Image (cartoon, rainbow, N blue to C red):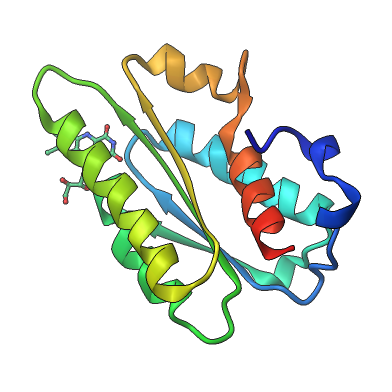
Length: 154
Ligand code: RBF
């Protein structure tokens, strides 16, 4: 687990002042993904990133995250991409299809572009479970996603 800010070891404390980050945020379950984005953004700043080097891009739903992540990761000036979304199980099978496609798609972008691409997508059975992981009982997975790409850059 990426853990919290204090989990960064000496080896992982790199200078990210000149690194450029993209936050790709799904608009579905907007109140959750906005909380993930805020936490990821704040974490990057705390780790030394510059506001001007953090770009936020929105996509309609989590299914669209891999394509936008790929377009951003392919840019020469981009160092890392953080994908943020929230898929909550409904009554139909869409949950399984979306989660699988998104997880696989995001992994492929990292492998194809050779850049850190974080999977900060909540896949939960209820809205409460999502809230617990977007600033509630179990912390904020946006922070973990930001920490993950910084660790991968180190
Ligand atoms: N996108 C999400 O990010 N989270 C969801 O919980 C979510 N639920 C969906 C449920 C259904 C039945 C459908 C058809 C789409 C849902 N989407 C959700 C949107 C999906 O990621 C994508 O934007 C659309 O399918 C258009 O490609």
